Structure formats: structure tokens, C-alpha cells
Image (cartoon, rainbow over all chains, first blue to last red; front, side, top):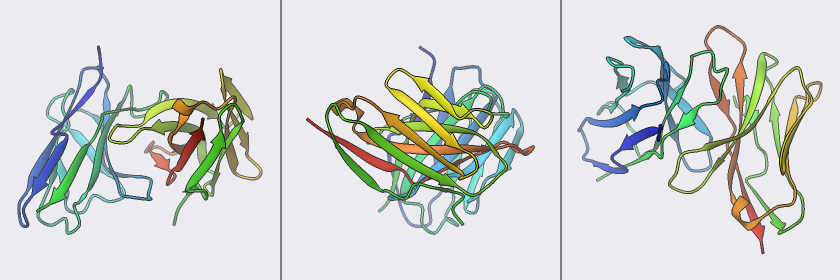
Length: 114
Length: 113
């Protein structure tokens, strides 16, 4: 079955550490996205990539970095510069960056600070 | 500045009755609207969408209405079932060159048996 796999499901970070969240898709989608969800808030866009080797900042990119070396993979690094990293992180993909079809989402990674 | 607003954080409905979830938006550049359903600890799943050239789209028990002049859309679920209990997000796509989805804050629907 095609889908989006996010790992790990739960992740703990010590103060000052960088951590990387994995997102892999086998849907052959060109575009991939990272969102952050906080309690009582909607999903906020961190970064998105419409094609391999290209990505753009979303609304809340500060303290995060991404790479898109392969079509299937879009890892997100939460750096020590992100002062409030505790949140639920969702990866999504779509057939194209034009969003003519709905985005598909992974099941998320919950990041907590130790 | 929230461009997509879901003003009701929660809604409780009796099984078999109609659930109406509302969403308001401010950006007139939005041209495509979607509803997603989300269970705890899972990613959102797509439910139904509507283009700005339409005012209604129906799929089984789910109907979305769009009132462009009021910048308002609503999701009707009838009849409501306990399995519909979830958080519902509305989302809007901008028509500019950088296509993005802007999400509302969600409404927790609880369908009581």
C-alpha cells in the first residue's frame, strides 16, 4: 500500500540538541510538506518542497531545516535554535505543488523536550 | 492574523442528527477548500473539497457548502455516527504561485450514542 511513513512516532530531545524527523513516501508525489500542530491550533506550515533539490520556507521556518535529496524523502531537522520545539509534527505530500489533489498525511511524530 | 477560522472548538451532536461544522475565511485569493478529519495520534485524512466556482459538493453523508460573498463554508454530516467523532479541520488553498494550504484550528466533534 502506498503511503507516508513518519518515524519515530515519539521523540525526546535534550536541551541544545538537534533532532531529525524522518518522512518517506512511496506515492511518487512531487511535493512534500512539514507542518507543526500545537494544542488548540491548526496546522502551521514549516517548510515545503515542490520538487527534488528545491524547498521553500513556510510560515514558521525559524529553527528548522530540511533537505530534499530524493523524491521519496523529506527529513526535518529541529535545531537547538527552535526554542519551543514540543509539538506534533506532520509530514504530507501531494501529486504536485499546485495542490490540485488533496494532500496525504503521515501519522505524525510527537516531539518532547526532556 | 488567522486567515481561516473555526470559531467553535467543540460540538456535540446526538447520533442520527445533523452535524454542522463552520469555517470562515478572510483571504479572497483562496480558490479551493478542503475538510480533513483527524483522530488522536494520527495524521489528518481528506474528507471532501469544493472549488470556489461551486457552492455545494456532496459525497455520501458529507456535504460542503460554500458562500463566497460571506466567505463562509460549512460541512454537514447527516446522519451523524459515533465513528464521526474526531477533530475536523477546514483548509484553504491560495490561488497565487506558491500554492499552500492554510488550516483552521479545528473543531472537535463528539457524536453521542
